Image (cartoon, rainbow, N blue to C red; front, side, top):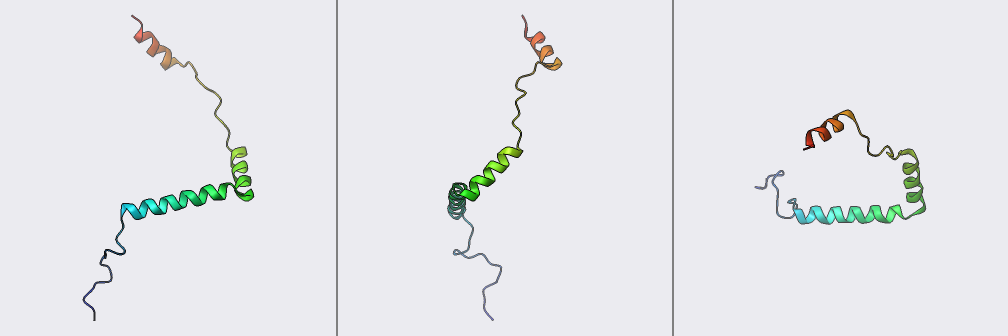
Length: 73
């Protein structure tokens, strides 16, 4: 029997910020490359056609009018 525990975290498999950022950078790079392929562009176009842009803009509502009234001097 060994003296090492199987659940012990060693220096080689210890999670670190450096490993996290390397993995995150690789993931972002892979997504960027995939988005430039024909399949990736089709997926982006499909998502863009299903998402409706919010074009209602600024609306003067009752609570905003009340706020404006309280700020008058």
